[in-house]
Length: 409
Image 1 (spheres, rainbow, N blue to C red):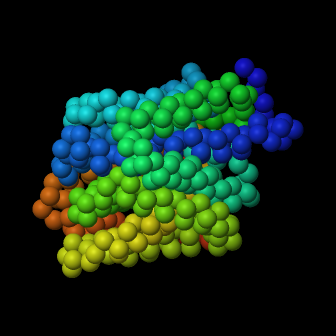
Image 2: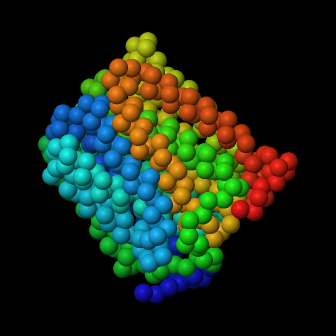
Image 3: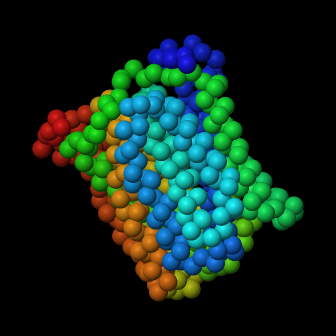
């Protein structure tokens, strides 16, 4: 297969350049993953009678491959990152397509594990390729566009769900087959239509854990722990407490992605102008308010309208998370990007392996306490974000770097 350097890829037609492939990845992945997510809470309740306990265990199993994402380092010894990403995308699509064939607790755990391996390994490689292929000066804006394209893909799939779910009396099986099949076909197209791109800096293919990246690791850990509460329990709350049906929860997702499609590119410009510290601090402060308000819904009986508004705001704040990627891109040795992407993904999922199942039991007795814990995690993230310097770079990874210079390792 033809190998082309990313520094000469600008000579190719626009649709065959590395950034175009990243845009296609950004479009294809959410078609399967977000459709799966949109239907999941209704499907597991309708087909398998899940409660908070079972949904917690399902998401714990779903996060195990994320915890094992460090295995990507071993795989890229034998397989190019780009090929591994495409194979993982194919696995995600195929597993999503057959989800409705396994309407039991054991069956859903199995198919979820397979799709999760595809999702997490794809995301690990995808994040690495983004930081290798996108120029640092254009990274915030380009990553903002990538988020926007992913939101547009979700908007398309969710829009079709809202319009057709009741009108055509669609089944879970049909929707999963179409969405997962589409993503799998795009993966096959990407394999045959694009050359293999070679970044200018060969990647280390060994385990990399450096002292000077400690703040990045800490932010990744807190991000993973905090996000699990939102991913697992926010939408579940809308179904369990307020009785949202498929078309209603999908309409809420639709609003989320319209907002992200509009605002994500603007957020990219804001990160480029104001820097990662301000962007991440704004995100975490907003999440503290949102999670505390979620708790208020249970403790004070606030209604469904507020819950829906908070859900949209939650998504908007999370869209700023790409500022963590650009922070790492600025401080990293370019050869560290691939192995550190794998290590960071594993760190991001340490809490995810046990937190959903553990909090599933707390949810049964005190749902508001779950969101209170999330607010506390966001507060810790806020404190960590304030340690990012205004102009991060190698040797200036934190505000303490000039006082206590980091070791080379």
